[in-house]
Image (tube, rainbow, N blue to C red; front, top):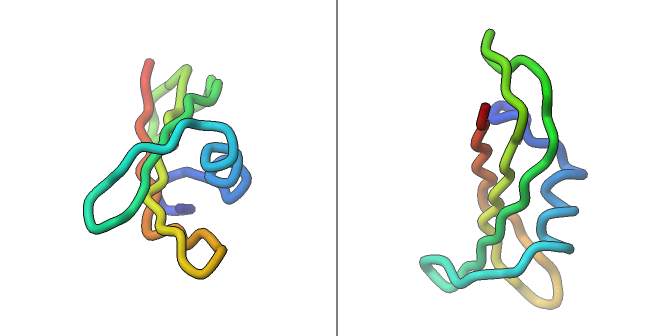
Amino acid sequence: MHYRGASLAEVVTTIRTAEWQPARRNRWECSKNFAYHQLWNGRYYATKQVRPIFAEEESRIVVVTAYVYYRT
């Protein structure tokens, strides 16, 4: 998550508040846009979208990966 620019708080907020959609391999995904207004890799972006891929296992959620998209 850190490498892609997502914080743990953003991933947790996304999973708790966004609508879940089925993903491959019996997993789930959802996405949420966050106001960003900062530089990322030398370029300014206004919005950051966090899209975690996760699974429900034994009454807990396991995050497999988190994609992050930056938009101007």
